[in-house]
Length: 188
Image 1 (spheres, rainbow, N blue to C red):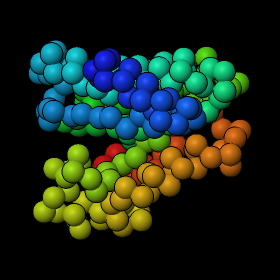
Image 2: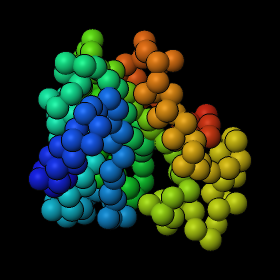
Image 3: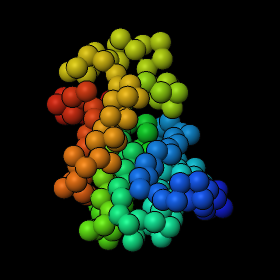
């Protein structure tokens, strides 16, 4: 969410490649686990800065640097926690719900040149989500109809699709990539 870093990243991309066709906003943080009623508001600000405001900043920068005139695609990595209540990670879920709404807003404003979509994963085996499954992966995976947790390539494949021409008529959508957990009417 460092604005100088964002500006430098887009500037260096333009210098190196002369274009910024695709943006995948994959930054995320969740430094707190507990009820939202007791959430320190400074922590809430940090969560929103990282999970929402930084995505907006990168979208604005790529829009002005290239996409406004040349088109492209943006993919925001949201979460199933943004689609339903998520006990103990409420601030994270609320921020991801905001990111989903930001996706819709940007899709509306950036059309017809730029397509903007989101991906809402459930638990994916990354360092970020490790606390949700470490030492109990089999038990955690049992709740999923597909009987496994996600892996990074599951999300990468969805992002590749959403930035490709095969998704040329898709914008403003949130693709749920969750191993079927929503079939159980809940989130992981």
